Image 1: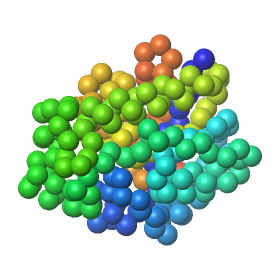
Image 2: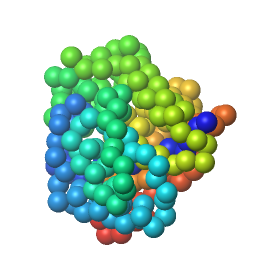
Image 3: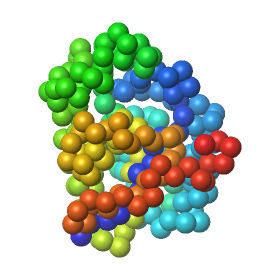
Image 4: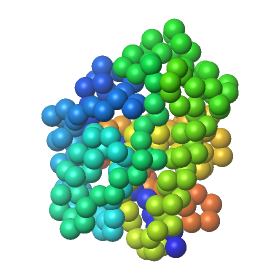
Amino acid sequence: MSATLLLLRHGQIKANRQRRWHGSTDSALTLKGRIQAGLTSRDLRKNADIKAVYTSPLQRCRHTGSLACAHLPHTSTVVNGLAEMSIGDWEGKKFTQLNDEHRLIDRCNADLTWRPPNGESLGEVAERMANSLRTISARHDAADTVLVVSHGAAMAIALATLLDRDPRQWGKYHFHNCSLTELSLVNAPSLGRFNDCSHLGMFG
């Protein structure tokens, strides 16, 4: 048994507009984010037979999941391992500051065990994300599609780990808010559609 995973990045939050890192920071969806989730619901209703829904514990994912799956009879299951990468004391800083002043990406990639102050290492996020996705997939039949609502960096690290066997390749994978990505873990992990925003129209 190994289901197809339909990965959904959460809808927009204010930090996305401001280009700030909100990893473990628990942020609410913006109006645009709620609209994006509603448009995703319309697409899923027409084009996907979702058998189960799993979400990160952070409210932006739980809210996105509830809006996107409002038409489904089953409730979502929270999986702590699907949470975004925490950068600890550096949460809320702009990406430019994180890279120019702290060399965040370079330091993460240079040493998989290095952590930002009170944050997580790239290796830790890779392990928990890959294990979470494998566990979810294995719970369901091969013909099933399950929705997994998570975060941009966490999902990028997961794909790099599963597809490239190297979490340091996470820069290859960029997810827009409420984009959809198909991942199969049958035999060798493989991607179907990736970062699909066609259902979002002008809100993509």
